[in-house]
Length: 255
Image 1 (tube, rainbow, N blue to C red):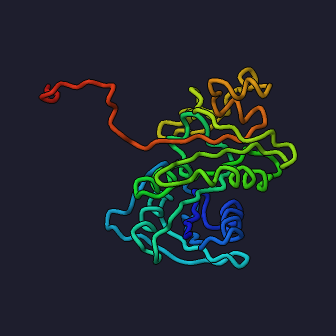
Image 2: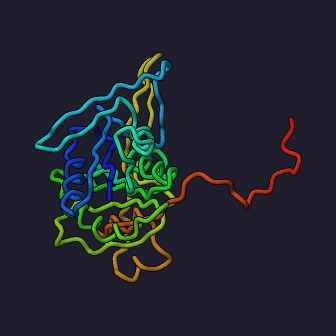
């Protein structure tokens, strides 16, 4: 199996190299392609310069060859699926992102955006993230990925989030829905006539975390609550599609 490994944190990010090694250890033919630099929050953007010229290159990190692109991860997936680096991938793995992608915030995640773009080309895509902490337990995210990877079949899109705990403290992997509220909220403050400062704040999950196995396997719980309780979460996502529940005028909408 040929697998594209990408991210939204750039070619030097440790999570990318961990993910590439994970795939290589399982006998996959790894194609690692990442943005030149930070591309967080790019969602499914495929933005290119007005002249259409996109810079590419190659870099080597501890033996791992990484192709670089001056563009967001969804663009990278598109180029790879069109054969820009040889045989198109059978699978897209995106991450490992430092910082969970939960609730409605998946709409803006470059990590998840790459996985969603894979489905556009009939490939399964998996976005992998881990909660933040002073020390990142990458192996816990990879443990969760190993458990859900057999589910990655065309055109499935999976969003995987792992708590930042040692593997022995992982309570399990739960299939969950998206929380109604995002795990992180964007806030904006004007600090001058021509300047706005943007920041992000975590939402409070203390009152919503599921504290027992029963609470975390019914209904099902949202991803924010399950992750806060120490579970790795996996959510199947669907890309953009028409909503059959909305009835529009047969002759269109006129002003």
